[in-house]
Amino acid sequence: MEYIVETRTGKIRGYERDGHIAFLGIPYVKPPVGELRLKRAVPIEPWEGILDAKEYGSPAVQKMGDQFLGSEDCLTLNIRRPLTGEKLPVLVFIHGGGYNTGSASDPLLAGESFVENGIVYVTFQYRLNVWGFYDFTGYPECEAFESNCGLSDHIAAMRWIHENIAAFGGDPERVTIAGESAGGTSVLLMMAVPAVKGTFQQVIASSGLPNGVFSRETNRKHVELFLEGMGWTEDDLPKLADIDPFAVQKGNDFIAEMHQYRYPGINLPSPVVDDLLPERPIEAIRKGCAEGIRLMIGSNLNEGTFFVRPEHTFFPNSWEMIEEALRNNGLENLYEEVKTYYESTSHGMHNGVDEAFINFGTDLPFQVPAIKTAQAQLGHGPVWMYRFQFISKFGKKTGMLCSHAMDLPCDFNFYKEGFPKIQFEGEPEDVVERLVDSVHMGWVNFVKCGVPAGEEWPQYQGYAGPVRIYDRDVRTEELPERVELMALWERLHFYED
Picture 1 (tube, helix red, strand yellow):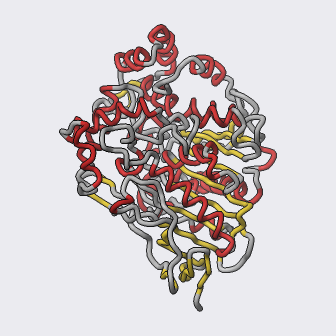
Picture 2 (tube, one colour):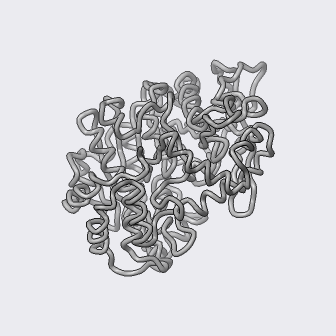
Picture 3 (cartoon, helix red, strand yellow):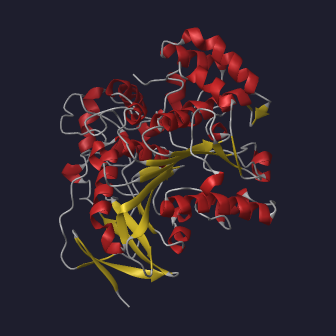
């Protein structure tokens, strides 16, 4: 049997796989190559004939370890749908990777369990690192370059999905967007981007970095490091128009290695405030830009163990670095208060790092901005908060505890192979199954019904909660200690000007 759908850009052939229909590698904009390099996404022209959507497209240009991966011609999306059904709920998942690495074709993100539960599941590739999230506008002879190219890919993908998902059995009025890490940031950005208004109704933000946005002036700190890493001056930047796309990874690596030592507390290159993103997301959400959007948002208990290290750290790993971060942001008068608070949260060392810095590295990018986002949307739409805090035997043994991304196997009901299998090794099967089912079906219920878990998970009401706790005992709790946390962090801000 042939599975051919007709979209506004042309006919597409899908293939039956494991009880569902997959349409993979669908181009949603023109390839960003040649004259379109460092240009925002350009709508694709309709094609003739039938596009064979049998295989994933290439991931974006990136470097993983010592290996170069991907292609500039990477802007494709993937759709999986049940064998039958029309006007089905839609889940669009945006992959993470710090806007630096990652791919929509990661087996963990295949989304087959969502499809089995009657959901149309969509992922897409977007440009990364230098080609997607560096801003070179305003530099000499860089007038042809544009800002927020990777964000423009998100916008184009959401528009394509909105216009065409009905052809795949999806309901364009029942779309949930979800993401983890940078993807979690992306879905919160989508709440603040005017150009995608109306293309989705619900958001699941997992371990996002809502403050991972820069002014153009602050972005120049990244460009300065990039130039140093490349051995360039500003006059060399026009070379970006023709350079080998992998050559710039040298400068990109330098930023990753040095950014915390030069500007402690800063994030890696991310979207900038411009005409596509006119305002910082939390501020825009507070003003009601996402009126009516249903939001589920949360983070993991020990996000910081993934990022805070004795050397080559991604967030501050010493009191000296935290003091400098405060001084860089005009907050040096709060140093003793910050130090006293975080010293009180420390109960030892993990992988050679004091828990105080792990907790700071959890709060700075993840937990505190998530709470601020929930608070901002309160009154504009229903909000549910969660915290994933299951510390497995693996987490204890490695010192990673309940770190960044450890919730993903539960989100996707994908835990019996690969790294997820190692993560849960030695745990009682019934405990793991109960945890995975609670998390995954919370997502499924939210996508299908607009509520994650019924009466036992009430809506968020303020800093203390209520908060859904995912642990060996899944429950809902008030977290009154967050009131003190937020009293401190309402006065802290890092590189937000």
